[in-house]
Length: 480
Ligand SMILES: Cc1ncc(COP(=O)(O)O)c(C=O)c1O
Image 1: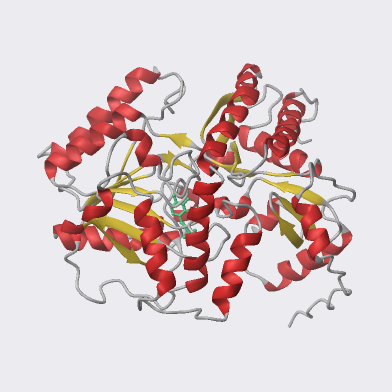
Image 2: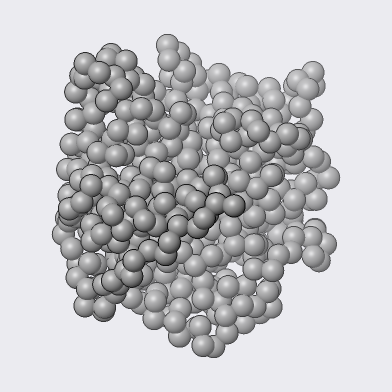
């Protein structure tokens, strides 16, 4: 038996209200130790010894968190980082937004867990979510409260559409990500994750997806407009070819900006054509807004920017604004033919998440958060646009506050994934937390809080640009 590492030395917790306020109001980060610092290293070692090999973030972001406020995280060694991971796009109003803390704390002593029983907090949350839908949509939809993860809601959406159509196949898109449960993973493109898992959910067919970017996401050497036309032709074929081998599916599922897939916004023409054809054929269109939803792309839902109405919308991550778990499926009433108990789950009634979610919607209106998302998004576009001229940058792309910089191999032998890792590590050393994604993790991603200030964004962009420019410098030793 391996000996458990000794308990860490007592860790001072600089968690007074004053220091939290100071953290929230910082203009920038500071990193004063090597990473990880000594106290973080202690907890990372204990984590490595006791936690699963499947753990992810600490492998690339090697620090232990002491506290967080707004757009900032302080680690156990006193280093302060700008957090542009934001809990994987969950913390839309930053860490510990004081008003969200207040309502969640108040709710805590009233009622916390309610299965799917009605309560004032749940009713207000439902009302708030319906109020954010485009005009008229609320009149003909219903909401399913799911287990609290995006993947659970994706599973529910698949079960819903299979039940309603009596069909069993699903069309999904390469590059897509829908979660890590067995079924959600079956719908996900990333083969490295799927390879070790035998017998995935059958009946899933993948089709290529053209992006609304200069490259259209086309393979190297393929003309972008030809690519878009080919993707559409393949999609039409898949749904209509009597000799195509794909039965009429129970649903088509898509992200309108693929997040984990490397920030690929879907082509507008393609998406509208998908909507048109699925409607004609009676195939429900599921739009997975787990990452794009609740304001991330500059509208409450990304589908609004495509001028389409999906049959099913899946949402989760940022609904509570502060990381309290909640997930929903919003769907057309006509699909509501599943039986009582068709998709149960113990944790469908987190009242704290509901209270915080209502307050989040209120703050979105009052503080014009969507305007901030659009303005900060333009700030990013203006600053990063010029990066395209670097030989290691393939494309800069994004919507609202969801951005990706796709890198390409360096002539000195470093691959795109290796460069992206270097950018992530370099930015972290300068105090900026970034995420990676896309094929072979070659896309550097930003998911800032949606209320990030212009000043913090400026500082973050300085760090990011410096990290990318530094990584693009030729090195004689490609292992560096
Ligand atoms: C588009 C999309 N769908 C589903 C999921 C799965 O959500 P969860 O991790 O909460 O299961 C994610 C998570 O990143 C996502 O980005």
